[in-house]
Length: 256
Image 1 (tube, one colour):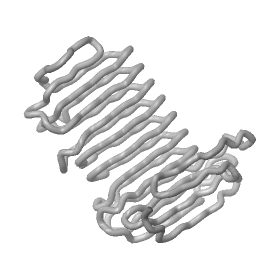
Image 2 (tube, one colour):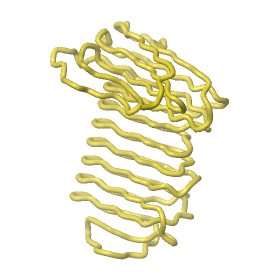
Image 3 (cartoon, rainbow, N blue to C red):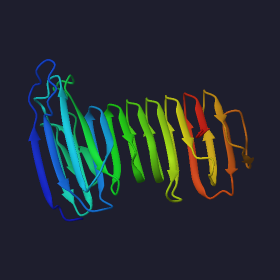
Image 4 (cartoon, rainbow, N blue to C red):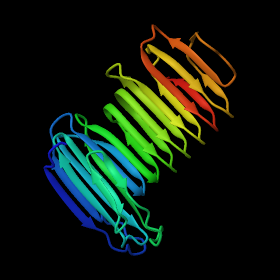
């Protein structure tokens, strides 16, 4: 287990109507390569680019947040931010947020939206249970997921990307590749649209159960090909690149 360097716990009160203040704020200078992870049980998560070496995290509350709190834990080259319910046997560590039992008597009308200002030398890792996830301008390895929200990842300069939603759409634009890591984009009941540079070498797979497939790329087909699934090579092949959904459309676009 990695050493815990620091911890901050902040309780959240009830927001007044129209309140716009930041109800939670945390900032710290971090080293290059630091992963900043956010795990939010109820609220949107937004990563935006920042200069310098300081990570800044703000939270804005909506509704009754009396039974919610924010935990920030620091490990070597890893900052973990969790928005959790009180008294629900939940915990937060370097692997994220964990729910050990279900608290049935809590209210569900409270939410905390988290915004992270992320320096270019650091890595984005964003997750929400009931909220949208937006990542703008992140670099390197990028990870995002939501259970009931949309994922919007734009202007990435990425070596690898993994984005997964259960009941939301996935919309990703990669402006440039900075490495040859794997690319994976999935939804269960949403559309998945990915736009990438034309200079791409990948072993590509796309599939849907009850939607349409559409690609701008010329493909060298191999293996089984059907109306609902394609396995192909783009360029010279190489990295694994998969785009899939169960109930939705899949689109692969080239950047204009």
